[in-house]
Length: 165
Image (spheres, helix red, strand yellow):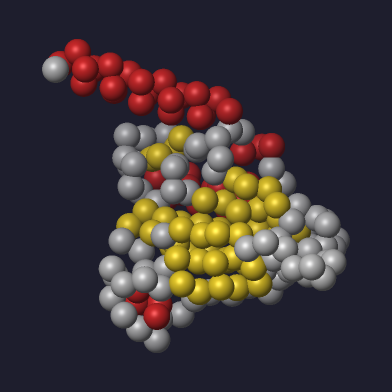
């Protein structure tokens, strides 16, 4: 049993090290790097150690329909030292959406906790913004934590947040 636990710990450690090698925050534009700095600041404030990003922490996709890359920064698999729940709670995990503006700069348009999300298929209308279906804490729909709460939002350059009633 001890050998199995040691093997599992070594395998998990090797997987985290591999993710850290594959992910490089400097591969992304400044607006995304700013969003990623949140993880470092949060981890430091909790005396957590080194931040380990998963290789899929940042998803590059045109959400606004303008042909430019936009970014979903999902901290659900990000680790703060040995802690696996620094960026997640009962409301889900921290997610940020950063869009690229026509002048090449970027803007964070969403920063919140989500339990999950699904990018909806693009509209047949060329240049239309993509929508994301967000699975949220039940309180965003007037309920409580365990209740389902789904909200859908078209992603544009205008910042948004989900409010609790």
